[in-house]
Length: 434
Image 1 (cartoon, rainbow, N blue to C red):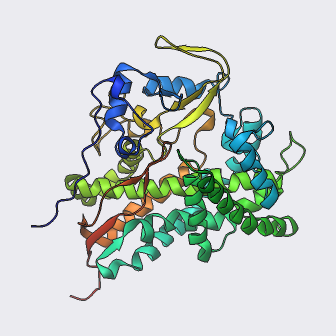
Image 2 (cartoon, rainbow, N blue to C red):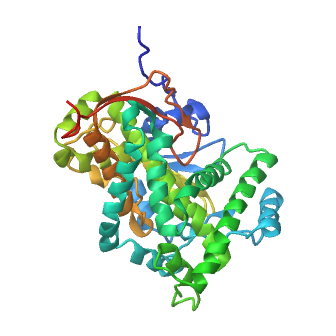
Image 3 (cartoon, rainbow, N blue to C red):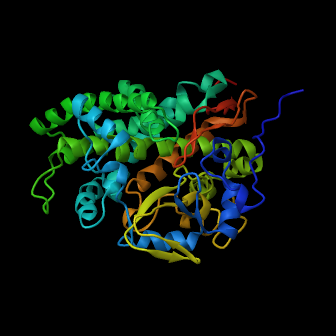
């Protein structure tokens, strides 16, 4: 008898006393825990981390609009008064590479607005339209590499290289280096996990420093010879209010966090998560395949809503805040759980289901909202569109292979699939052999 593809049963806490988030088994499928917290404790202080988790849609909308109260500054990015492990990390960067500056994602206005203006110029509707044919071309070339095999490891052969090749084109990196860059982004993510030993933490930092030494000569070359790429603009554009372009330290912060992790890893996980949803909901696959022009854009929004590649991000309170009867003291770290808000039944009907007719599918918070709305969202949407459109056009039918475990890499902030094995029947192309 063939093995049936199914996920392990999720952890379903029966009460708040049993609620845990910083646990690998809970993070594997956190949605029952989110449901409990959203209903009974929409402001919940995790006893293991001390972080206040916010889970209701409207509360997140309020927080994302109020950047004066909920700051994007991250204590871990400020090395001025670092002690203990943070000082060890600082010294590692200083001795071997460059101490990262504060990234775009870690800034508040007015600095954030001033710095973001550079990126906004690179992600205009016109610029995204110019890249559309390239994204389509890359998706086709990647599928051509395995379509004749009848099977693939979808993450490594498709979901990961597609956005990486696109972002490498923008950032002046060579296509042949994408797996080196993937190794660095994987290490960066692992280094932001819980329970790391000092050795594991320093390994992650050393990998990031390898990336710094890869990109530093590119920065220097682009200062001498600008070439019109996004990275060239980041290197050379003078921010008027600052009277200078970004420093090397600031550029290195942008490369890992905002550009390669933010610009490729999240899209990779959305593509992989979307195909897994289709494999487990074949009625959705059949309907999507029957009329992709009608359903595909909504499906892409549903993928981001349901999978929420960014499960949550942190903010820092600048004053005491009262929410739902809970006092959050000034200086507290809160986590806005996008993934919980994206399944809030007060906002989305039947929130745990893929609905190709959902009228408000694009209202999800998968790309955040407000001042810090993901600037790469338009490009990510096009990458999702062409990833699924190309697969639909080339594949008659598919199934998730028996060797899948469906496990995710445990991570408090991101939902990460490392492998997804797929077996498929290629679609007969016009003019092909009869």
